[in-house]
Amino acid sequence: MNGTGMLIEKLAREGNLTDGELEMLIRERTPESAAALAAAARAVREKIYGRAVYIRGLIEFTNICKNDCLYCGIRRSNRRASRYRLSEEEILGCCETGYPLGFRTFVLQGGEDPYFTDERLSAVVRSIKRRFPDCAVTLSCGERGRESYRRLFEAGADRYLLRHETAAPEHYRKLHPPAMEFERRMQCLRDLKDIGYQTGCGFMVGSPFQTVEDIVRDLRFIRSFRPHMVGIGPYLSHPDTPFCSQPDGTAELTLFLLSVIRLLLPGVLLPATTALGTVMAGGREEGILRGANVVMPNLSPPSVRGKYLLYHDKLSSGAEAAENLRELSRSIEGTGYTVTAGRGDSLLADG
Ligand code: SAM
Image 1 (spheres, protein in one colour):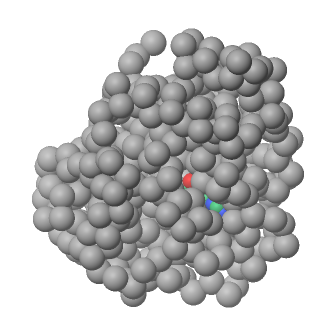
Image 2 (cartoon, rainbow, N blue to C red):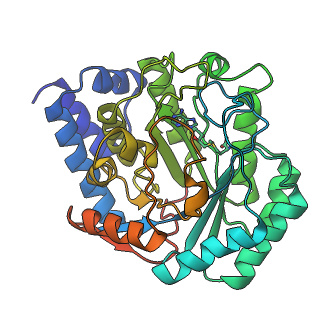
């Protein structure tokens, strides 16, 4: 067995590698090592979750954002973005559509829109929980204060997704304006976990200036933070951002890292993201074969889907939610996995 083969065996056996070994695994990857890693990741994931793939209904409830992240198509300075915000009734309407289709988690994702004060957002969460008490609500609306997170948790929010974006402070500064601070983002993640949310972090693969060392830091952070969920997807450029001519991240490295993350944190909920489905036809299905176990079909009203444009050519179908889900389920079942109703809580072991 060659060097990387031994590393894969060690990673599968011990759920860990040293930083130097992770770096070597990534740098020296080949199609053969990716296949061996994927087989190990599938075995670990099937032991814990079987062949279930959990669905989350994604509701992109506002594309108004006060932040100016250099990579993001809905950044404040993008005057060409056509802005929208869903009303509470429209958000509930998305849940009404999703519930009979089997969705039991609704993910409210949006820009950092100052309209959604704690009062307004808590009211939305409370209404969803009142109408759909057997459903989980996941929030993904950026950085807020600890007290705000606590109020939203008390209103009934169960989970929170906040990608850390990069665990290297100097890399973070290259991706964000000076007003955004690495340490604050990390503090938000600690607060969320501490308050009791099932918490998700994550990063873009191939974001501008990212090095292999940065990726190793991301992996090390993920392993020590022990989030319940990890969202990774390729960086894809947006024409109306300062990073418009930066190259896209690849499906190949994203898929490889999905397997690595599954082995580092066997019980984690790991989505095969829209960005992965955008950069590669069948990317989400391939993600499932590499160790992912979550997909997040879009439940936003078809009229706004074309406006939540984080990057170019975002995968989006004008089809109704039911048709979207039918198609995705059919193609996932073609890979031998089963799209499963239910909340699909994390089975991450404590400790
Ligand atoms: N505002 C919230 C936040 O910051 O967490 C949630 C919305 S934000 C648009 C969701 C995620 O989209 C970010 O965490 C980022 O990783 C991802 N994203 C933004 N621009 C992207 C791009 N150009 N390519 C790929 N992913 C991108």
